[in-house]
Image (cartoon, rainbow, N blue to C red; front, side, top):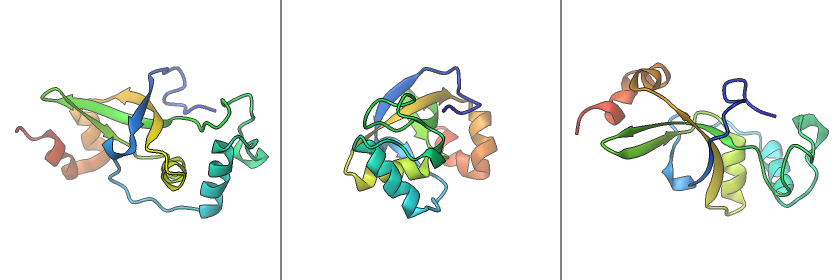
Length: 124
C-alpha cells in the first residue's frame, strides 16, 4: 500500500526518530498501534489494514511519508502523518524508522505550517 502522493517515489531511508519534527500532536488508537507492533514482530498484518504479508518484508511497516528540505545545508524532516507507525516504533524501542522522503519547497512547508514555518525558514 502506498500513498497517492508518493506511490512512485522510492526515496526510502532510515531516519533516527529524534530527527523527525512532528508539528501536529497525534491522536492515537492504541489497538492499531499494538497491531502494528505485532506486525513488526513478524505476525501477519490483520486484514483490516489493507496489507498482506507480500506487501511487506517480515517485521516491517510501510515507510512514513516525510517532507524534507535543507536550510544552510542542514536537512529538516517533517512527519505530518504516520503517527501510529511512529508510536509503534517508539513503543517497540526502535530508534530508527523507514521514511519515504519527499522534497519540498519553503512555500510547500508554509502551506502545511502557516506562520509556524517561519521558525524553520527565517534566515540564521
